[in-house]
Length: 208
Image (cartoon, rainbow, N blue to C red; front, side):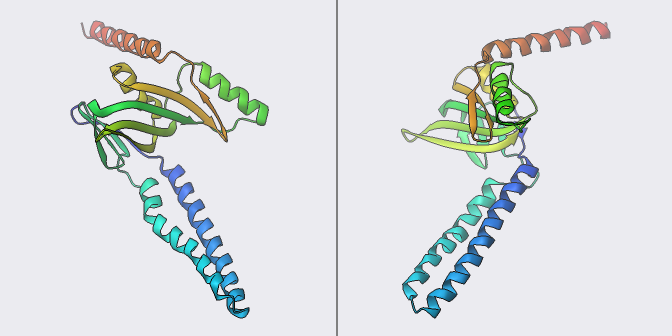
């Protein structure tokens, strides 16, 4: 882990979030422009102060773009002694908890989606999935949190589960509903370790 294990953002997901943001921005600008015309026509100049909402959107734009990267740079990197999340470096020893939320896609109607959500929460963790990666750590005696939406979210969480030095949590989100995983992640980590060991032994025998 000297060079760090890299986890990349979901470009497609972030592009959709950006598009949604700018469409909302465009709609707001249009509405406020029409309102401004009415305010000026009726000489209700105090109403022009509502344009502060547009200024707020403009101020938030750099933050939105930063939180929804569409490039090929990793959104999170996990090293032996530190973790880098969206450019923020966190010492591993300062981390108190790690949470992962897997984003699921709809499979049918409301009932079918709920059943699917509960099924995922009860079974072994899904791999190669996108989700939210959240790290809570101690900074100057206070708790701070950094997060990123990344691909292979479960794989990132399992690094901390195997280490066992921080609290961990896995959950699944589908629409507005959320379920926390009830699967034993420690057992899952042990299963992975056994499978990896068996694979190495098998390859060694083939070489001999």
